[in-house]
Image (cartoon, rainbow over all chains, first blue to last red; front, side, top):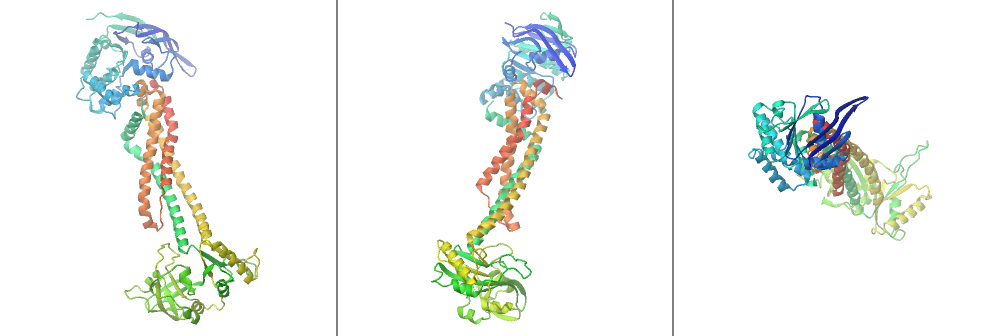
Length: 229
Length: 409
């Protein structure tokens, strides 16, 4: 069964009398363990697709099944639980809370999942060790480099063992060395069997993924499986 | 998410904006401290009045002259008439006609300048009889009170209040046996009263000079036998009411007036306490009302800052929602944060009020009594203010959609 299954998904934004159709009927399936890059220029609808895939927004038309659950008709609170259980986000802006040390940023999803304190800390530290930051658990984001901050964010995405990791331009704010480190980390995460959806506009970043979806004007125009090098 | 988690998150947020949190709390702090102190001041004043009045003696009735009407028809206030006389007092001292009265002390009062060879002092000059110390519950620190013989003769003797003695004879020598001059007449100081301990400014019972009533009349040139007040001590607390009836009947009869238009008033200690408290209460309610408004302003301050905080932390809210926080959890987080500010402000306000209650009496000469009830109520109010004014910002935070929140820069 597909982890992600979109059927005829449309998304219309309305501001005043102007209607804008950001997605115009997207069908796609992502299987478990796939590493998919969604590539497209800005304005192509890729952010909208990312929001819908991440359950941050619901489609205007069409159906979205995530891990077998129909999420297109859920309430806001139900969506929050789905995000918490099934999705690990990695954002371009890292989105770490500056006042909290790394391990407390990582444990945040577990707090909302209702996991007890001691177990949270254990799992947060384990996730940080997995991304190579076992010695930085007590540092605040301000005391870490950009690449390290994004690794903390990856650890936060991994800590709940989600169905998919959703990375939105994860290297957009990083230099080349950090970019390679973070992409290498995502490769490792994929190698360990996790499903990753990476959204980017850079072809060399997209080249790390085994499958490339090109989106243009609200439609998926190319679905290309790249053989492993 | 458990309550402890919510509390921890709220505490983190309050701590990470330390200066802002302190400034926000300041409104609540000032409001709570002023409410507690105002109520404390009012309570203190009431207690003081009660103490002063019960120092008069609990079995005491105070008979004052009624109002007078001048020939032009202008009516004076209570006490303006000179209808009470020494004869009234003597009549009240009759154990057969007025069995519930234990002692009667007629008093004249006026202001007089007292001179010594080196200084002078103006104080209230009280003319009294020998029963005065008993009825007014006063004792002597040194020397003696005057005798019935001295009252009858109009002897040139005076008993000074402790404050008056201090003003006139500041040296180490005892005032007893010294002479003072009032209006050209030399008086010998035969005693000094013990302090009543009451420290109310202005009308101190300790700043007075007591002479035989006959002497006082000679000094002030009053020829009639009228007196200012007649203090009556009933036999017991239970006898207060019958004593009141007996005196009332006696005076109505003696003055030949009807009960509907008496020319005197009889007050008991209870009625004095009641009157004084009514005045005090009005003032306390007024001041506490003003303080409560400042508390309200403090609450609005909390709401203002919470709204700023929601706007400023849109990204944080978006992130928390993306990570699985439901609208309810977000709302609760901001509510707890607001009530934490209110509660902390309340605690600090109570501490400041407690310090103020220690320091203020020394500065303004007014006692402050803090009540546990008022303090608990103030703390509750602070908490309710925090929650109440946190509702709107919290629901705004809860309504933010995660994408809008995440997208904002």
